[in-house]
Length: 305
Image (cartoon, rainbow, N blue to C red; front, side, top):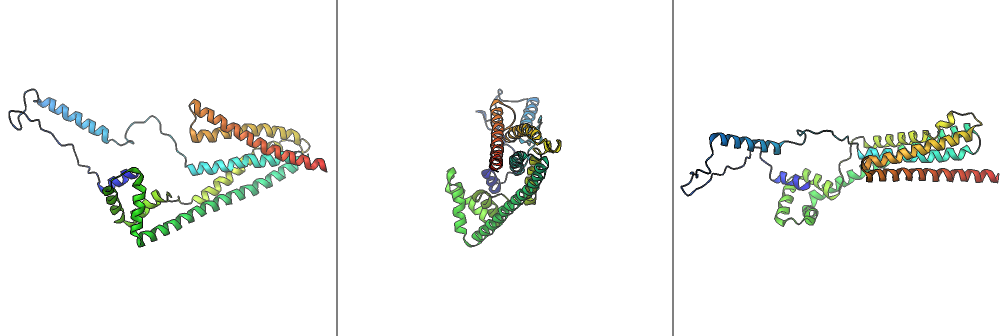
């Protein structure tokens, strides 16, 4: 993509360019063709129509070509934040409620689980917000340093441009032309170095707030699932709610593991199904280990008492 961008920058394509017309030559003289090469007026018209139709097919943009179905794309960062919040929400609160269940009081499980959910969601959301703000600040610092480098050390920025294109084996004259064109526009050079040297795209607006809210909501939604059975039983039926919660979480963890893998890799095909199944099993194993550890610790403490 960088070569296409730079080619269009140096040699912008003309919208009026058309293929040159080649006149056939013959032994009878210039401009006279043998009878076998003479075209009737209808043939010439049909030939021109064919050429124009081919040109229109080539020049037609991808948006103009008919397509059966367009794939809906989701921002990868939003998916990553949602997966982070849900994965922690489905494991940590489940492990806590499973451990508290063996204390024998449903009310204690509900209150402790809700307290952990609220505190955990706030903590996870703030962590995502602060982390994204740190990335934005790092981007601004890099932009300032690159601007200073462009204005004070153009020889070094020329070397950076050369180093970017060096692995592709381009002629030195081509790289010099590209570098000169970029240096004629400091803003374009800054954008080029940020994207291809530092590999830092511009951060999206309100990215930190969206990240924090997505992680917090994902954590709360995931952590509320194992609490639901405890709202539906009596205070002394905590073990019954525990086993229902285990069954619900097994299904939820399996579905989440399958879904997060399918979003990344795709849903169809034997290989994708195999990876989705592996992701689902991994989530069940992780959630089971966390819950088992919490239950074991609670039972060890209560047994000693």
